[in-house]
Length: 254
Image (cartoon, rainbow, N blue to C red):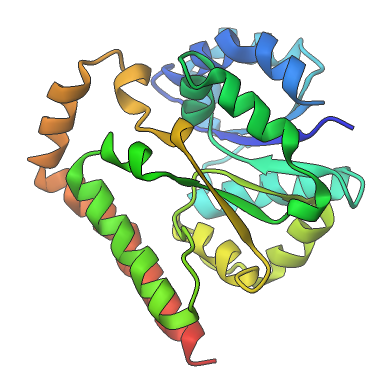
């Protein structure tokens, strides 16, 4: 039984859907289907891609009629996928920018092998950024997110990515985790990790290198320097790092 991908799609600028279209042939080789959610603003902005999506039965799509918070979007999508699949079906909660990057460069073979090798016994499994993958990211991204990982290790004795980019788990495991998720912003990803912290396994991978230069067709070093010097980018990271740290602190006292 092929695994299933679960991908939220918020793309009002029309940047991500071309990448989704480009990798769809490969996605069809790797996954049995893809569950997606499409925000209301995305539907209005790129109607041609909505027609394309609706015409391909490989995609199981939710089309939001009103604007939702990030957390509401994610949870609606995740619950839909969990409830539609058999209990032991392996789901990959992931993001199209990361998938598109991994499938269109030298990481492709390693990515496909890692996805295909996941068994029910391996789950829940967080694919974590390796040292080599982290080295490609802007320094402020790396340092702030690794503070979360370090605090988590101090509190729970385990090195986990609480701001994960790729989580593989069975549909029944996802159903069990969802009631423990209460945040409605991007920090909700940490609640999934907290819900499974005692049983989650991890694997460090190079294919989670920084995807933005590829997605936006920018010079990696130039873009990296811009992000490292940007107070706005640092603040953007703090906007989810601080709530995640608060979640970890609260969970350690229960």
